[in-house]
Length: 299
Length: 249
Image (cartoon, rainbow over all chains, first blue to last red; front, side, top):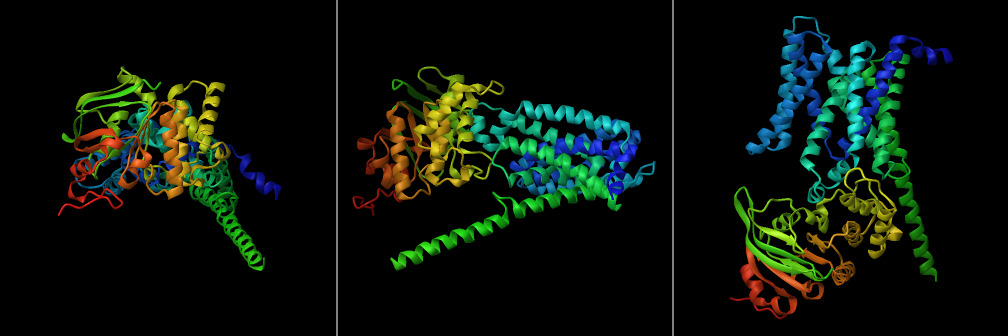
């Protein structure tokens, strides 16, 4: 049994995967705080899907070189984000509609382009991740992104906090709200690119939403959400990876499912905002008031 | 402090070059509570937004205590309408008041004992010390308004702009908030609140501003809050409340 549990930690490729997972999970977990509080989940999903045509163009132009992939994905996500703004500001089409339209088209374009690629491309690696195939260069990209995104988020915690709480008050106090929003978008795209290897474009949203959503059910502190989200993202991703090894299941899906199950447990049992404690508390209060009422009737 | 004035000269605010507020000139004195009255679309929110610098005015200037420009960032606090706030946000009453200090501290300076003291003071003034550790959705409507006022106090703002603060409050909460605003004004602050319930104006505010695209009238409630001004501002839909109003036929 112990042998079975320890088995994944004996292989070098698994240790490498765990290391990647921990970093990706932490960065995405910290960032998930902003996605959850700023209600950017749908936006993030659309951006993740729109990475695909960028990857495809990069493969057509440069082959499978990671630097090319990185820039391709980044440019594609930026183009979709900008296109969304352009359409929604210049016409009567609202932002969610233009976002949905653009990302579906971008995703389709990606699929078409990939089918034209001269090299054989494992499509499902891009869609659902391939954490076991992490190369050194992939690890470097993940390092670099974490080292860039985390310090910036920490350094700008105060103005970001003011901005996501109430943008108009923040702006009235001289906080550069627009610049910070763009910065947040940039950080979002970067950490999505880092999570491509682990969970792919389709599942990236799981790592970017689940951690903070879970902590949000426990805590009323922004810092707790930020750091707790990071730690939970790290722990959940590694556990998911281990589960996928033990049960011989796809790793990306296992990571997202483990994070999802932890969220479900929090939703049910969190003492503060969980469903079950609230249900029992309510009944308890009701009984109290009933008792008071009947006593009152007797007196 | 009470010698401070908020001087608005020839203020015009436009959205996409369509003016929402035209050529308003006003001089308000700190130490007063003022109601901003006008129908929907009269430019009340634009007026506030221009004062806190959210919209760049087309013409005119806004000066506090003689010097305009940068300084007004700290000195003017804006309290948005209740619906504009995400009440589930993970922040406590104390955390909200601490945000007021961030304006003074900038992005990186440490939160020191002086800031702590200012926050305690603000919470005490708003009678929120016992509720300081509550998440902001676990407050009543009146307490929520006071929590935002505590933030403004911690910021040491002299001018407080409130967007429809009395909306949705029951009578006791309304009276309490009214008393709080008067107390803030008496302490030397300038309190300006947009307000739509004309019946309660005389008991709540010292002065009134009538606005409908342009400035209709400004002055003490006792002399300026008249049927003529109400009719001029609200057109034939005007309603001055209990008993003493005759609708022109």
